[in-house]
Image 1: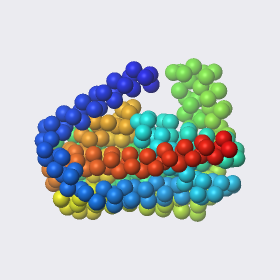
Image 2: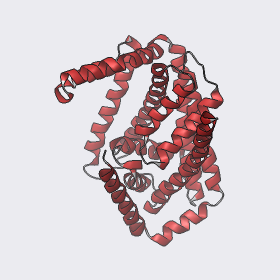
Image 3: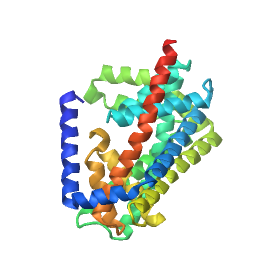
Image 4: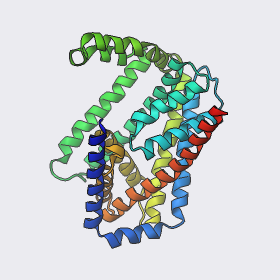
Length: 324
């Protein structure tokens, strides 16, 4: 994505956020944000725990561990800083994690296989949560006219992703390298074959983990489920800080619904604007005011930036240590 396109999307996202705040009422949103008070620290602490648990998951995906957990946690925090503060999402943050693991002495293929495996398993549990949220929305008839069919398609695609994961983990047959070869008609056959060959060593390690270590796979999936559970708790605490209450089912709908938007608008830097709009809409679907959903989105951005700033400090310390 070119710098101009990124800047344009960021500008558009900021404009959407400003429009949403204006329509919800600037004073109303500011009042809600002010009401959060000390709970912002609690929400940030929950999110920091979420990041720590994901670091644990990454550490457990490394079958031949040569890195201490504390180092993996530093790397995970550094990735959080890159992901949040550059508005690039996982597109830059995940490679940075792999690169930092390589600098810690991990083989290149093993480092990137661990990073991709952790992200894949996190995505699997996110898909499970999204399926639950979409199903609840569909069965509750909480969707505007025309949205049910769209979300029905999204639900089918999400289930298909889970099916592909189940196929790869149970059969030991990788799908990424063959998929790269299959798109040769777009990339060019020689380029697609070269990309598939380059990725084969990494995918072999991923499949080795998924198919050859079922107990470890189940463990990491449980860890990722705990990470997502903390995000659901994060919603409950943040909404309480805004002066409202939300049930656990409602929090699952909000968190799961937002995950769908994050995937659909992955091309938008930081999902700026799209995420705020989704929160506003989902708030209405669970009986909260639109302004509460928008304020929730802003609170979660603030707590993400707080954790990311801590990660930036860690990233700077890593850089200083490597030069000493």
